[in-house]
Image (cartoon, rainbow, N blue to C red; front, side, top):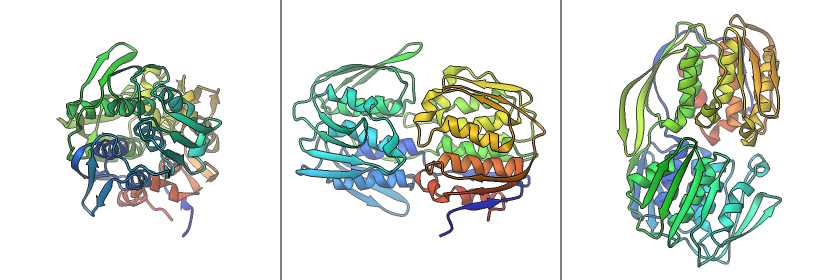
Length: 441
């Protein structure tokens, strides 16, 4: 199969209604929590990406029955701490940091040896941030200098903990919450603000969790060893996946799009706030609460002159997966934009702050980058007329998809490698882009 695509023509204007697959964060969390429920949980609109399929495969290896049909998925849980106990189990998390870190929280209670491995990209990422606090529950870890592969030696006598999570990592916080679910007593977590899907799911299931919100941190208290009820769930559309089409439309003259039933959890909508600050025309329609999550249709019109932004760092955590796209918006803005305190971007599937600068340089957009900041000198009239090659980006799906958006809106002749990367999060991405009229070879 051909591994690269070629784009040599800007996308024409369009007026479309679009539906996006289920939210990846919610899909993985639903499966993991369903594995701890007493009984059968059923989901619709589950994202069928490699990250989610790898989650289901890991659960099967741990003895959980999973039924995956065309229109739905069932996970038959056996209750808390009822994974299969073998002498040794190996789980492959593929490219998913969410899966690898969250499932560790469920494994600290499994009294056997479990090895977790991942692909080349995931194996470069830091796992000390999660193994260090999980040790406090009583588990032991054998790591590769804090990276995968990691072997977990669980304990049958886990202790509740107190922990201060300072990085603003929803994955670390969620891993600790899942570990606390299986622990007798009260676990207290002080966490820097980040995505709160796990908290919302816990609350909807009426699990004993208390959350006290402060200015920069949340105080989370969890009483463990309570029965988890099954969760039937139609998973809302993913805002991170939707953002590629939001930005594509903003950067395309005379284009309009309406994206249906998108998860607009406030901890995920930083890009919408940034777009409004930059003057983009965007509206939320038909807002409602569904099983603890806020969802909405998102209507966007393109062609507006964008204002530069000195981006408030307090929006970083709620837009962390969208910054490569936000850099494209800044490239088209009428002035200089500045983004700071972004070191967490380089802890993703690839060093994304580095790659953001590389893409801009290839496009001819001046930028000044440090280890945690970038200043972008926008050019509203930028139109590329040269060949650009994007490769060797550790198969980071967001680098690939951002490059597609750039090629379709800024022009030039682009050759973008590793199209297989989109299977980790958004397998239908290219098909949906083509449905808007894009010409991709």
